[in-house]
Length: 102
Figure (tube, rainbow, N blue to C red):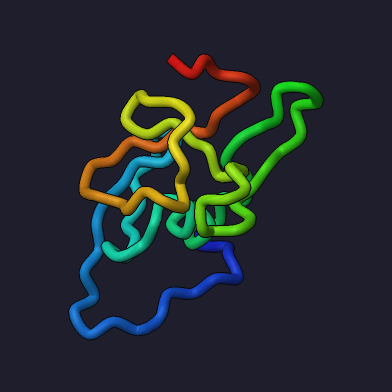
């Protein structure tokens, strides 16, 4: 995925990155980002759709309050991307519509 985002990572001395898979596509992101920040960093602007209208939703508050950043992480739905740090090999998928809470 090309970085078409307006967000840029601050310069880091160590330059550490991790490889995560977004919708199955491998991307390298700075290792100190949250999942929501990594999605925005690589240009993914919508992380889920609403159950009622199907409208795209994107990370909004970036502090765990609004729940607009819900994604599926390693097969577990309803994870807050803004509150979850990236890690090597993580599998991230968009959530489309309603998911069960179980």
